[in-house]
Image 1: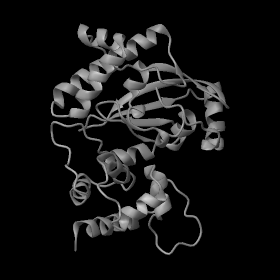
Image 2 (image 1 turned 135 degrees about the horizontal axis):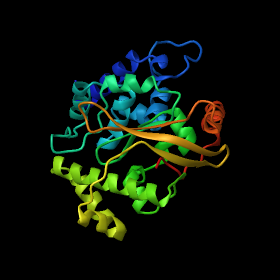
Image 3 (image 1 turned 90 degrees about the horizontal axis):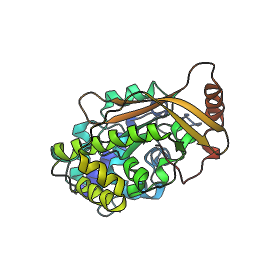
Length: 285
């Protein structure tokens, strides 16, 4: 059996073992198999149904690392399974000197327990790699973003649109922390060409980033408040915390509201409305 046919067989097998309930989807009537349908995997991965079909039927040529990472996360593959997927698709597996987007299964299960709070997950370079439905309803669907649009540091310093507003003090703390994060990432992932390219382009697009980078500023993420402006539901004031996943450089950004607050009431409304009022030009910040 060729590697391309084996890729399709492996994807189909991984899809069959994941039930809709495991990933927070409704069962949806009579099902021929207990696993995920292709359209459900496509929804979770942010890919088209046609592309998932072509992957499974060995008709997709040279799928990129980014494309492969999406179904790997949606299917909750282990590190070994993810490596096998990449090998079958002819893509190199991220080495010790490269930023990884792998989310360990235990971390995924932990995130599932926080479905009542908007949350998003970033890699060591602050690329958005995972978000829950409530986060999508609050900020916009991350699957609509491409390339650098998914990088929170690029969005900030390049002046891309955001639903988050900062006070000058909050902005200074945020900038110091993320610049320090990228400096640490370049030391740890010295072989990652994408990360080096990001730093170069940030220096070119923003004199402020270049200034902060050159000063060697050091900042850390502390609990802070975030003001988020939703075009339909109104203004939210959240407590925002950045958590680090044990054994990885993943960063989990969680937004919570004080019980009984106006933000908590709006969040319940947003949870009911869901993504039907989303726009496609926003992301987390």
